[in-house]
Image (cartoon, rainbow, N blue to C red; front, top):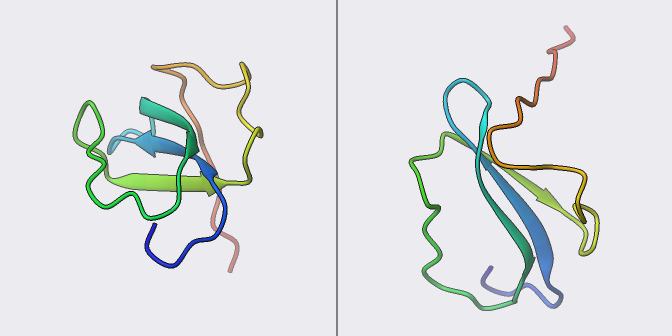
Length: 66
């Protein structure tokens, strides 16, 4: 979050792409945020994007196009 000017929403996912932590409105210059459980992936979104659309243990998938 260094050098960020606005807050963001953040979703932390484990190896299975299951939501292990959600942070709404993570403030700029937050130096040491650690998710509640170990995370392999991080999704950063504009503020107020998550609302109640994503919950802990949700499975989020994506495909890789070549």
